[in-house]
Every structure is written in C-alpha cells, then in structure tokens.
Image (cartoon, rainbow, N blue to C red):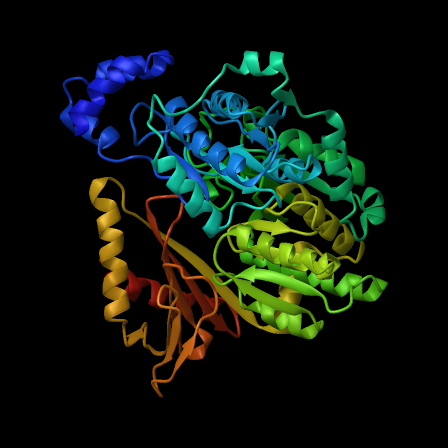
Length: 571
C-alpha cells in the first residue's frame, strides 16, 4: 500500500487512542505530513524501537508497540517454555500506556508479564529480568531524546540488551506481523485479573538496592565527610532510587532542583534531557552557584546515564563522561589495590570510542582492558562471557564516553544509580584527603598525560537524512582523507569491512569485533577521529581524541581537527 492507502486504513482501524484520531484528522489535507508518517515502518533496530510519538507506521504508538511486542512474543515462545518478560517504563509521554500495551500482547500470547507498579530506571529493568528469571525484558524509554520521542528497548534473559543475532530473529518475526490484525491482545486489566500480568514486588527493588550498595569501597567515610550535593533527575526516573542510595551511604545534604524533581515527559525546563548537554543542566548549575555544593549530579530520564559538575570558587565546572569514567576507574583500581580487594586477573571494559587514558590506567594496575563496539550491551556481553566461566568477579568496571558506567555484575546495562553512589563516594573520599574532584582530575592528568575528547553530532533528519548519512560514510570509506588539521593519517580502520590498514606500509590487519558501520582515522601524535551513524537518532556522530602537555594544547589541536573535518563532511 502507498502512503495514502495506509493513511486511509489507519483512519478506519486506529480507533483506540483519541490522540491518534485527532492527529490523523488534522493532517487529512497535508500530503507531506501523511508521507512522513507512512512512507516506512518504524524499524526495530538492534536495540529496539525509537521514534516520534504519533500516528502512523513511522511513529511510536500503541499499534507499532503491539506489533513489535508480537514479534518479541513469537521469539520468546519459540525459544522458551513457560516464557516470562519483565517490563519497566520511564517518565516520557505515554510510556505507561506503551508498557501496558506490551504487557497485554505478552499475556495474550501466554507469556507471563511482570511490570513495575511505577516508573523505574533502565538498570532496574535489567535487574528484574535476572532476579525473576525472565526470558526477556522491555524498557519503554527514549533515554535522553527530546520530549517528542519515545522508544522500547528489548533485553535478553541475561539482563543485557538483545544481541545482534537475537535482534535479527525478532526483526524477521515482526516483519511478518500485520499492524492491526497480527498482534494478539488482551487489556491490561484482563491480564491482571487472569494472573498473566503481575506487579513486581518491593522485595525486588530492595534487592537491587542491596546490590548497588555492595559496590561501595569507602562508603563508611561518606557520612562524616561533609559532602554537599545538588541533584537533578531531569524530570525522570532517578529521583527516588538515587536519593535513596545517597541517603543510605550517608549523603544527607542533598538539594534537588525543584523544577526538575518530579516526573514530566514534556521536559519543559530542558528540551534535551541529556546530561551530556549543558543546556539540560542550566537550572542545576544556577542552583549550584547559590548552594555551593561539592558537586552537581544529573541523571537522564531513564537513569542509566549521569553527568556531573564540580564547584570551583564562584564557578561550576562540567566534567565529561570520559573524565568521570577514567576517574572512577583510577579510584576503583587504586583503592581496591590498597585494600587488597582487587580480584585476581581483573578486567575493565570500555567502548572503542571511549578515552584512551583508560589503557594507561589499566596498565598501571595490571588490569586487562577490553575494547568493545559502541553500545553498553557489548560491555554487558563481556560480563556474560565471564559468568559462563564462573569468573564474573574479575569484572571491576565498565564505561562509555556517553556518561554510562557500571560497577558490579548484578545488572547488564549502564546504571546511573550505582554511578551516582560511586561518584559521591569518590568525592567524599578525596574530600577527606583535602582534594576536590578538580584536583583529583588534575592529579590523574599529571600521572598519565592530558587526553582531550570531544563529540560532534550532525543531524540528518527526514526522508533525505538517512541517504545523506549513507553517502557520507561511503565517501569516507572510499576516499579517506590523507590528513586532517595538519596531522597525517597513520592508520585507517573500517569496522564494516573488519580491516585496519597501515597507511605507510599498506599492511592490513583483521578486526575481530562484529561488523559495524564505524570508521576510525588514527592520526599522528595519538590523535584519533572516529565516525559512525547513531543507532538511535538521525545523526552522524564524530568522536575526537587529542593529546597534549596541557589542556590548552590538546584543545587547540581539537579545534583544528574539528574545523577541517566539518568541511570534509559538508557541515
């Protein structure tokens, strides 16, 4: 069917949601609006669904959610006997509606659905999958995207986001499901009544808290440290769990940003509820200048990411995800080594776009560092490999540059709750030693050298956006630049072709990681440019690494690289 035929079908069939009915009526004479909603299906990618909330095949709504869930249900029923699925959801618009729609499909397919009584963070979903012995999990969230988006992340029985192989199986099953006639469905209330849907009990949440607290190293020092914190959950799910954990370790002086304390899917105070972006932290930064805390914590809507800023006189200094991750790795390694709690043959894991300083830290403490593809599920996958060998205790920490961190193996996704706890514990510990986090960061750079990491994002929205991203990647793949910013290309890696080429010798080395649409340009002076299309947003992402004796030197080099590479990309 073409777009107009699909539109007509939806006006006849999509009758359960008044918002969709009104939206469809409002665009009846707008061919461009109709085309944008129906020119393709919302794809179930390697991590699940994500898209704009609204009517149509290319939107997040109860019908696209039911269709995706039917595909997931077919996979579960084909792979497990007496299958069950855990479900959680965040504060986004219609998150609870989509979660209940998914539960209704699972229940109709004879699959037991466990759902939290209220919104809960992504790590709590991962934990519930494992704690309840479920076959799969669903987290309804669009993470840190703007308010118009929602999404749906699928998890395997290990509590990790589904692997590429499983995702492909689920995608094939979804593709065979008719939008309206295909999904089996009963109402949420009927599922509760017949026992196919149950609420997740408080004992699971308490068990999660106990596992988080078990990751502490110096929590005994926190209550007497005088640590002062400003916190913002950015109107998401972090408010209760983060504050609960901080209270339990003794951080009593916590000031919450009032405008961003309660759940609000409209995110009226921060159009981009992403702790990576300064705009999202403005209210927290303003409050910090008044309160003068030791640090500002900010978690994203599904509380799997956390960003920080540190007070410095009358100013507040933002830290990058790379810096926080590296500092946590250094803190964990240094203090566990001193205390004698470091496991034999310890392992840390990071993604390929994450700071190179981690390699220097790991080497210093005799820690094996594993690099994986971008996406925290690949970090979770490494924990699973260790678990299969009965060696999960070797894992000490994993992180990615986009503000995702995990200590412990109780969940298999990034966890802003445990990260918030460890960041506060680290700050409290250094405070007892007369150091701020800024001074601790400077000490790390003096020890290992200055590494500058910056992220560039280039938006390519609409029908033509996907084609533009493909054209950019094809061009760079075919004709990699010989130099950028005055630095010659030393090595070129194409993760889709699984090969690294030495530019000087022409020698090629196989890349053993799974194929991925990622290009790496290794330049002189340890500078690196990595480019990849986002898997969740209509963006090309560029990761820059520069080094120098000082921050100023590394920053100046980054600015040269960024200016020239933007020209190469055509932005």
